[in-house]
Length: 151
Image 1 (cartoon, helix red, strand yellow):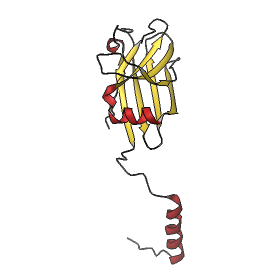
Image 2 (cartoon, rainbow, N blue to C red):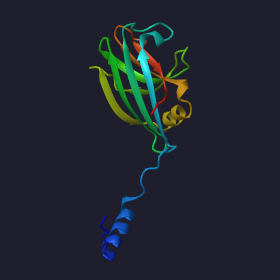
Image 3 (cartoon, helix red, strand yellow):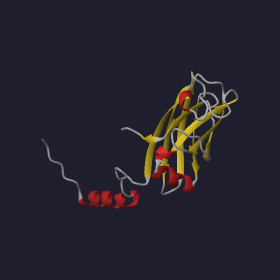
Image 4 (cartoon, rainbow, N blue to C red):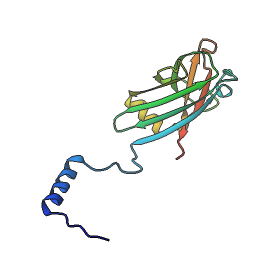
């Protein structure tokens, strides 16, 4: 193995550059919550949604910035007309806390800033659900309760 010497000026330059780059993200940052939900029509309440429908929601919440980012995918439903995060347990329907872009062509993604919703959902994800609506099922075609994402 060959040893290399790093000139002092290079070492100082690297150290100074590190000051401007800033710290690396800390694993397990408590201000970021990774959530997910499997979506299907059987989970819709109070009436069932599209029995053939399914999908997936991935939600990332940054409570420091109030940003809620999401990715939605759905299959086997008529074109979506709306999507939301609602507050309610898995056996109830509840009010909208954040609108999301409808996955009209089967998928959608985006980010919104809503500090109050971000803090509330991150604090108790299982008290919230994602659902997707369409003309055939205006109350909801598919739905899934939020939970921590598995790694």
